[in-house]
Image 1 (cartoon, helix red, strand yellow):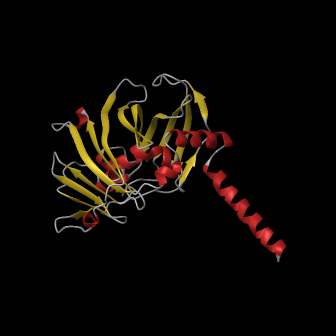
Image 2: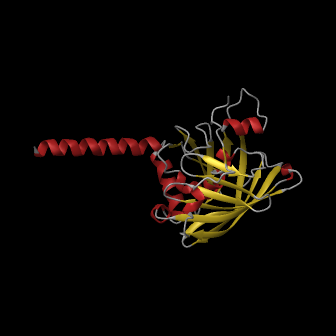
Image 3: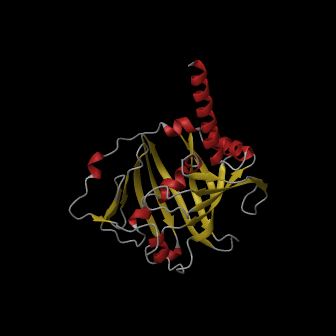
Amino acid sequence: MKKLYLLMAFALLTLGTSIAQSKYASKETQEVIEKMIQAHGGYEQWKNLETLTFTSTMHSKSLGFLRFWIKTQTIDMKTRRSYQDWPLVGSQIVYDGEKTWSTNWRLGNPPNHQHSVYYYYVNLPWLTQDDNVKLGKVEKIKHPAFKTEVYKVPMSFTESPILGKSENDTYTLYINATNYILDGYEYTVGYGPLLDQLKVPKDKTAFGPVLRIISYTGEVNGLKFPMLMTTNSLDMKQQYGDHSIYSFKLNEKFDESRMTMPSNGVVDNSKDVRQ
C-alpha cells in the first residue's frame, strides 16, 4: 500500500510538472516572467486582492468630436465581475460573470469586449499565470522604443480567456532587462464584432499588432500598475492614443446591487467569432 501511495504521489508530481512546463516555452522564459511578477509586487498579494477600482482616460483624434473616453471601473478580483461608469456620455457597462449589459451605451465598441479592456491593461503581468495562457521563447533585444535592453516574450491563449476576448488575441511582452518592469507590449485583438466595427477585412482574424509603450509605472500599496501609456504603430511613426490610469483603490466594497440588470439594460449577445 505504501508503494501504491508513492507511485500515486510521483504520478501527480509528474503531471503537475508537465502542466507547469506547458505554460512556458523554456525555463528561461519562466524565470523572466517570475521576475517580472515579483518586480510588480508578487503574485500572492495580487491574488489576495478583493477589489480593484481605478479611473482611466484615453485621448485620441480617432474618437472624433469627443476625443476623450473617461470611465471609472470596479472589478471583483475573485470573479472578474465589474461595473463601469462613463461620466462624459452617461453610460454604464456591467459584467456579471456570465453576460454583459449596458445602459445608454453610445461609444461603438461592443460592451462584451469593452468590459475587460482595462482589466488586461492594468493586470497584464499577473495574467500571464492564467490557465489558458502560453508563453513563448524569450529573447533579449534592443528595441528603439525603450531606453534599456528588454526581454521579448510572446503571449497567446489556448482558448478565449473571458467573455469579450478571443483565442486570437496575442501580446508580445517587453520586459525591462534591468529591473524586470513591464515597459510595454505589442498586442492584437481578435474579438469578431470589434473587427467588424473597425472594418477589418473578413479574411483577417485579428486587428494589429500595435505597440503600447508604458511611460510611467506607479506603486499602490506594494503593487505596481501602469499609469501612463501611449499606443503607437509598430514603427512608432504614428501615435494612436494617450492613456492615463489613476485614482487606484484596493479592496473597496463591491456594490452587489450593480449586478442586477435594470429595466433599461441592454444585453450584448455578440460572439467572439465573426459571423
